Image (cartoon, rainbow, N blue to C red; front, side, top):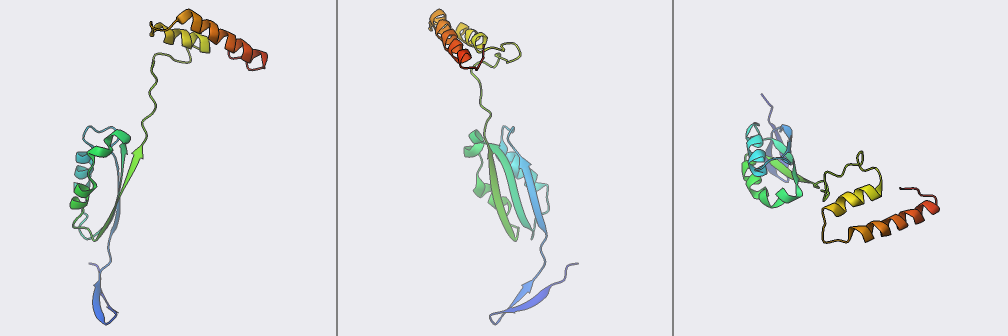
Length: 145
């Protein structure tokens, strides 16, 4: 059982009771309902009277879904709480995920693959321009072809 200490603070008696410190780390990046994941994870801990730090990770598109006031409601029985969101940037999506460097090891081959998906573009003239640009780079010592 924890001991209770009595201190005088500016003439007032204050009861001091040691608190437990808890840090709860929650990864909700891949969750369809990140709010529910955060609240249900907090519910798994005995946090009454504790000093609690919640650190949760979400993706940038999940930010509007998570309500910090609702999380704070769940933390009402703590002696002190801090809620820290960590927004994880979504990895950039390529317009053609099937273009893989192990199959298209030159810029011209990758460009050709891309142009095959864009019939409105003039494939032949763009490939000629790209080829002449790459030849100009190889003259300067940067062989990309």
